[in-house]
Image (tube, rainbow, N blue to C red; front, side):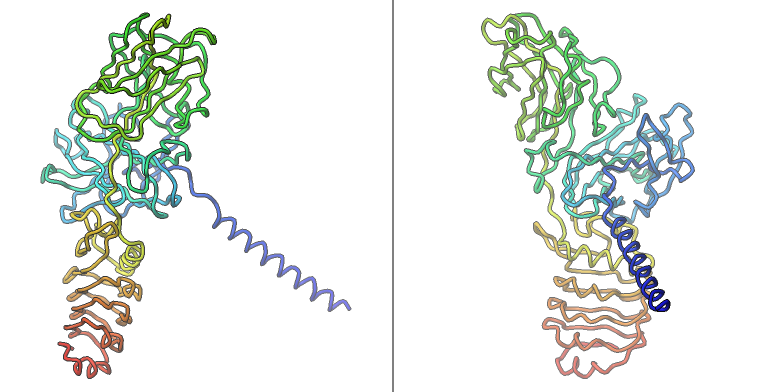
Length: 516
């Protein structure tokens, strides 16, 4: 009986520990990803933990595998601007950060740049930014740097997969003696309601201006804005007013900070309020516009401000009623170009002039497509199988077209496919994974004159393959029989390997040119 009880206890203990470790692993695997990342680019583990208010930055190591790092010697710099990562490799088509995200999640991505003459020059380089597979903007920090300021760019985009790539790339304006660089990279997860009228499956939003009118103090950011959006002060010749009642941000779709409503621009009774904003001309495009208003006086149901809003002479909203609770109006797609003029015209008999507290303008731009997920996964697996893949093998393999991975040629279309791989004499080592079989649009596979080892995998799914060059490597084992069944194959080069030629006769019977 004692022996039986002992066995039962042992069994129960085994079950308990099995369940414990199963639940522990499940718990770890099911932990939500961080809602955001604040990367102090170029910093090391010992210097990366920079805290600004309650925001803590971390090193960018582990999010990117290329580039050099340096530290700026200016003691007056904000901590996270004192280091940067730069990319001197001129052969690479792009330099990419890869960051874990929630698939389908909406994110603000912010890049920050401060040149600091790190390379001994006096003028910052000009280069491209790429989000996923789309060119997002040109980075030109020359004017800001001349005025002693850093520059930042911001885009709102929905993650199409579980990783998001943010890349820099040389363009025709990048001086040959300089290199793209970056000081900080931030991702912040957004609530579903924010900018939710945008078709994020096909478009993204690039920040033009985010403003608190009548505010002449510091930039409003976190914690006043839960997403650390930056609301810049704006004053002009119009009178300023201070508001006496607080708004509730949760009642606004875009969740603006209550502090952005504390001040406003206004004008006297019976006059139109005219504001040139933003204070620079815009290229002809479609823009997301959101304007925020609050009556600055004590709450009263009998003294609402009523006025109409026009943008560049076109009616934006008519007879808007503004109370102390605040209100916003927006357009998800409004055409703009040149200098923008806001005009707020009071309704007849209204005892007070119009008022405006805050505004946002973001340019709507079309996403440039993406590479088929199966091809992306196969290419990423191929990169992992190589011990020394090309430096630009990160981000989208195909897009933008001029920034595809080195040696990779792709089809044109909404979903790009990898059609050619030419890595001849790239000095590669490692193996050729079985996942190469998933690149079903591949027509030419050239990996000759490298140091690849192991066996040649089956390639029966590569129905479009026409030429295969694996010569001058260190492959061993049998030649896959699947090669003889490929309908369009016409030449195979396998010489200078240690291969068994059982399939050679079958290939030759089909009239395929084979060199072994």
